[in-house]
Image (cartoon, rainbow, N blue to C red; front, side, top):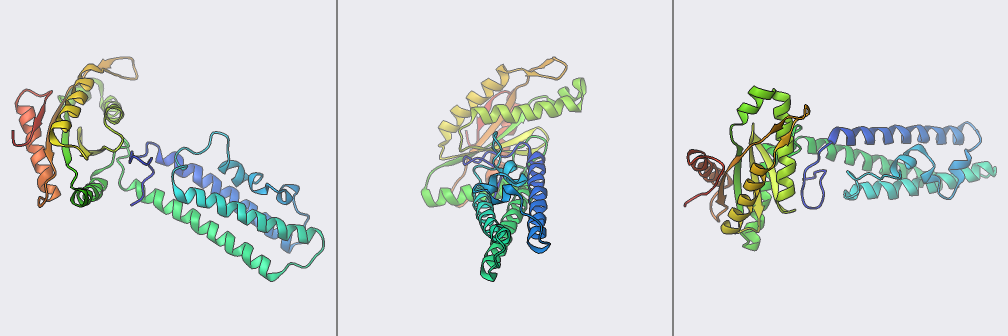
Length: 301
């Protein structure tokens, strides 16, 4: 499964902007492709930029692809690098054809076929990237940027298989914001949404790079902690609990909201399915809630 993430598995935060950027690049490419064929077919003069050695950087798509601030959402996606290579090769073949046209030389069918094959491969790579981006939207919570429950089950399945292969421990934790309804009642649902987004950012900043956070529902989140024994998970989660309690959320109007969270953690076990482990973590969360909230409870203790 593909996600617009870094190598540590963190989910995307602004997919719509990514899609808009890609659409802009595609529009630029189609305009260039049309212009090249008009030059070849209608006996029009080639543009100087298309005859340059670095022609792939002069077209609008190339300027978009190689823009100074780069594309941080794309740089770690292998197909994006492939697109750049195909785009450069396509321009090189187009330049050779346009130069022959300028020199009044015949255009070899083989050269034109290679140009078209490269152009088709480029188009397919673009479609592949679009497909993967759109697919990733289905597994991401649009409000917080955390994985949603659909993405959660796929990723937990991967972690379970990794645990079976390696023998490394893995823990799951249910996290629920205490008295979150008060935020919505006192400050409005927009403020509540902002708090949820800020919560995911705070949690992500405290957890390790290989941990994952999922929005389980409402103000409840699931944290997956691979390669983590239960005792170590408890220590990390208690550190997160303290950070949440000590960090007020600043609303857009400047008001500050302080919240705590309750945590229930359970280990993944061989022979126990994921749903049962989730239920164990949920029971531990209920123990944390009934025990006064703002605490970490471990299943089985």
